[in-house]
Every structure is written in structure tokens, then in C-alpha cells.
Image (cartoon, rainbow, N blue to C red):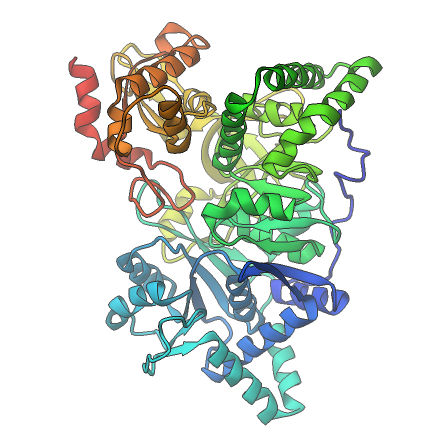
Length: 621
């Protein structure tokens, strides 16, 4: 279906813009690209562009403003806000003056903000708006190193008179005034700051999502980041003609390195979505050519298509079934490494022209050269579905501690269920306990203020212990079995990897998330979070009465619907691996809830603790 020779997918160039640090790379890129579009963001219903020259000017003004506030090279500034252009602007300004940039999730509570600010020794805090400002002001007395809070959006704060607070526009004014006051010396000062940091100096702090405890600050040097960003272009290449969406949290390694920094490096245009809820609408407006997302996004798109099909007429459903069937035949042959006949290729082209391209337009991926999934496990069947549409889906695997991606799927032989082969810039191997180990210049410096945790994670030979149990085949393709700490050993001594069951459950349009339980238990049970939109649609179509989310979950018809989905998945597994009972979580969870990480993954340990009584009820019956 696809070959490595296809220039649309691959690049052998890993140095596009020179620079050993993030700041040097950005300023060399800005000088090279000038009036080309760097970013777009929607404002008052219109997408507005900003050129590289304009972005560079704004970064310089903010950076000089920070220098005016006495921020020195090596000092840390934190950013608390949703993914938007101002986040990137603040980040680049911090890095340009030789500072260390640390992100805070916008869903974090005030107490968490206080912990992260103290742990990182931040002297400046950028916040999005009045809501985020309130968090900072609530804990200000406990932040002795904090010098100033910079607010991007001053709506509702016009009358604020607080000496510790300044608007982003006001900070830019300070920067312009400093540039004017220093005259020709301003350029010399600016260049000195850009070159103040060396490749092995700390560049950014990315705090882990905290699925097992308090977040740890992963220290990534400029070398760590630049090795990863250079290397990305040899496995998932993009260029100045590409359009990218920026919508995942920028304090997460996936969007920070794989999205923003990679796009700055390659010159791809970054389009910032309005908010997380508008992603389905914005993707159709932007029609990206390269799309990187987490499994939950891909699952939502598939669910939307599934529901649309239920509302279509009999002929449309028949046409889709035939067309996707042709696509699946192509995928099966590709997966097996067998040749695809000219007749089947022609049939797939016709199927795409008549049916499948319309499905791609419905999602907004009709211009995508390829799709990339990562940050969490994904169902192999979901990967096959996108491939059948004609959109190759490449799974990447890695973690914050290794700069985002250590393995990637080769386009010429996609194996759903695998994470691909080791990236060319690092080594991978299995330990005696089948834990995946990574070594290379992309591996982080360690955890901030936690040398003992660092020693537990990186051994004396430089191998990063990832915590993922895996396997590798004769062709060097790795497969993740589960997290080492999550493997279930039943009372009967059977080892079970719950993620396999969970991934299949999440492939259902009616299930958003699932946690399988059964360690030291006689059988497996499951806690399930339903997909509200799709289950509500099912209820309406079948005249099922409900008044709210809780009543929807308690409905006998919905319970039967989920039971049928579980029964279907159970048929794919051995009897001892099957789920015997389940419960639906009756509260709709969002990133603000403690059960979910900011990247929308259920915290297994916390879920087990919080819903202990609900879990016990399934074993008492």
C-alpha cells in the first residue's frame, strides 16, 4: 500500500535548520522563513495568521520584558494555560533569554500549582486568564521566589491594580522600552542571551501526569530535545507545505516536542484549535496534512462515523460495508507482507472515490498524508480501520523521559498491535524481566530534586527503565504487553495483561474508557465509562427514558447494551481472560476530576482505591 520510497512520507534529512539549542534553532528558522505563515489562531470566528517575522518580533519583546524583570539565564518560568498561541510565545521567550520553561496543566488545582512552582523554583508565572490567575493569587503567599504573574487575557481584569500582576501586552511594552533605551546594545544583549545556554544545559521541565503519585519534573536538556526533533523527521517527516493542528496540552511531551517544536523546526504551519471541545469542528476547517493525536481522539472520530452510519439509509450502509471491506482486504495483505493485485488496488481507488473519501471528509482527515497515534495504547482494529480508509496510521511509542518517541512504525510494513522498530537515534532492548529499556542522547537528565528516583530509572550503563513490559519479533518490531506494575496475576496464577482487554473495549463506540481488575482475584471484573453522546443517541433511538447521566447509566437497556459489547469482546479471549462482571461509573469524568490525568487516562491505582466498594460488590455476588 505504501513504500518507504514515497517522498510524501519519509525524509533522510535530519538537519533542516541549524542550532544546538532550542533558542538557536528557533531564531535561525525565523531568519530563514521571514514572511511565511508560522501559526494560525481563530479570533472572533476568523482564522488569523502570524508570520515568522511577526512571531519573532513578539518573542523578542516578551523576552526583553523578562530581562527587564531581572530574569536571569538558568532561572525557571512556568506557564499555566490552555493550548494557544500565547503559550508558545511565552515558551519561546523564556528559552530565548536562556531560561528554563516549565508547563502546568490548566486543569491543575491551586495546591498543585503551588507544588509545581516551588519544586521548579519558578520566578515568573504566565497565566491564561482570570480563572488561572485566581489559582496563583490563592497560593501567592506560599511562593517566595515568585516575582511577577503575567496574564495573557485581561478580560474581566481591566480594573485590577496588583503590583505583582502584569498583562502580556504590558510585558511587551517593557520589552520595547528596553530595546529603545539600549539602542544598538540591545541586539548584543539579545544575542548573548540566545547563546547563553549550552546543549547539555536544562531547557524544559515536563512534569509526569501523576498516575501513581505526585508529579515528577523530568529534566530535558537542549541536546535531548534537539536529538528528538531532528530524529522525528527521519521517521514521521513533515515540511513547510504541511498544516498541523495544535490541540493537545502543551505541557505534555507529545504536543510540546512532537507538535510545536517539530513544526517550528520543519516549518509546518501550526493551527491552534479554539478549545478541546471544538476539535472535531476545527479539524474539518483546517484539514491538516499531518495529524498526531492520542487514541481517545481517534476513538471519538470512529464513534462519530459509527453513529452517522446508523442514521444513514440502507443503500449508504451497504455501500460503506462493501467499500470498507475492500479496504480491509488491502490492509490484511499489507499486514501479511503479501503483494496486492492490480485489480484490488483499482477496486480500492473506486471505493475511496465513491465512499471512503467522504468518510475521511466527515472526520476532516481527507488531506492527511498519514496519521500518528501515541501516548497511550490503541486497539489494533482501530488502526486497521483508518488504514482501510486509505490513511496510514503510524504508532509511535516513548515517554517524557526519552524525549517523546523511542520507537516508530515503518510505513512500508505497518503491523497493527505493534509500536514499530527502534528510532534511529536510540537503542532499545528487553531486560531479563521483558521490560523495555532505552538508551541514547534523547534520554533525559533525570528528575528534578529527586536523585533517588533518577537512580531507579536510569541504570549505571545509561539504560532507561521504561516500566513497560514488551516483546520483540525477528524483524525488530516491538510490542507493548502492559505496564510492569499493571499486569494482573489472578488467584489461579494466570498472568493477564489488562490493556489488551481495555483496548478492545474502548474500540466500542459506546465505551470511552475501561479499567480491568482481577489481581489476586478469582476472576476479572471491569469498571466502564460510557461514551455519553453515543449512548444517549442509542437511548433516544430505542425510546429509553433518562433524565441525566446517572439515570442513563442505570437504565437496564444501557446495561444490556454494554453487556453485549463485553460479551462480543470476551469471545476473542480465553475463558480465564474473560470479564465476568462490570459496573458503569455513574459520574461523567473530565480532566478536572482526580480519576483522570490531564491527558485523559484513567488513573488505575486511584480508581481501584476510590471505587473499592463498587469493585467488592462484584466479588460478593
